[in-house]
Length: 263
Image (spheres, rainbow, N blue to C red):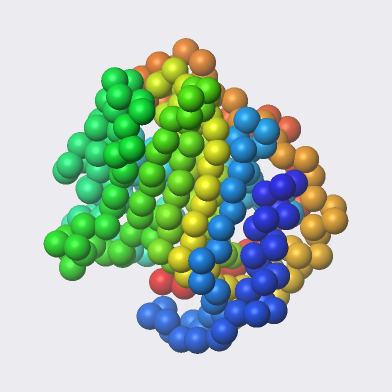
């Protein structure tokens, strides 16, 4: 329920106070800068209940990027996941974007090693924004930066920085999948999931999403309690997680709210 309140608070703020402008997609959008949500993952798993969020699809995407470290859309399609099809290049990839940057510079391995051997480090940063490779990316990374911190009580905190946030479609995915990622990395590092902070530099609502989001806003008073995320406790290595190892228990939600993708 806290997830719905924070998320819909931003949606309401954009609709009431955002400025309408053009962007590269051709679909005008209302936008506000510097929107922030923060969740204590020990108390709540942040997934929306005022509409259905395809949690399993979001998990497949985050594993494709962080675990498979792949830029090959065909690998994602093997999981019957087609959310990247619109950006697939002729070679079947998204160029040097997302998973490519993790694999090329061994960023996930470096993070896992620091969490194990130097948890007090203040240098646990995973960055997908590689200026040199931007021209060879099918899409510049939106959720491009994570910064990690281990608290003295053994809690793993994660801050996600997102340069551009499509509030209707993208952000509900991102908030759930990076919270789940924090749980996964905490488990294999012998830690507990702590704070998840989601910073959105440009939070926007496309004009053709406004009516659906007004419907969702009207559901806030009927939001459900947050579900519980359950990981397969036998998984001790991050690279061993499978989509079926990450499940939600008691995910109650309102109906779907279809929205068109602005490519």
